[in-house]
Image 1 (tube, rainbow, N blue to C red):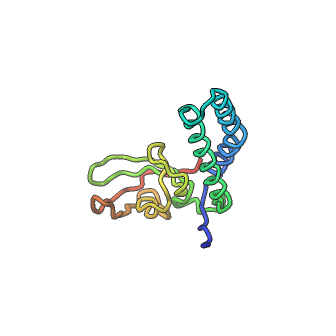
Image 2 (spheres, helix red, strand yellow):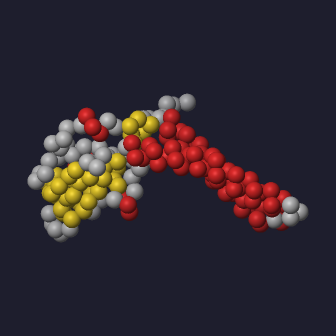
Image 3 (cartoon, rainbow, N blue to C red):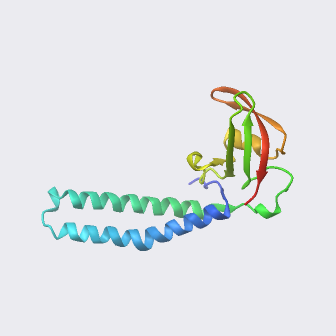
Length: 160
């Protein structure tokens, strides 16, 4: 079996996954086991929608536990403290402006596992993320996007 690639996480992302795993193993497993027990007590399982729903939920929980275990097994945390403070790096929050539309964006650069654009987190492996890394305030970076070439000006970056 091929070895899984390393997954880069922020310390915050690692902590969130560890907390989620703990919650799934301790609380959610217990809750679903109780639902299954109650559904079994209702009798005939062949036509018991509550039982089927609880079993589906149990399967989803176990799949998520396996996924988190795999991520944590292959996780490395970026040493954000040792990175160059003069340039944008993994873990930096960056504000940049689209030079054509003058729209401003602010995102935190995280690993692909943590990326969540709706919550202001983009992957360091994304086209935009890759181009932002190593840039400085005032610098213009060019990014090839599905909608064509975009030029972004770095207006600010910081680490939390």
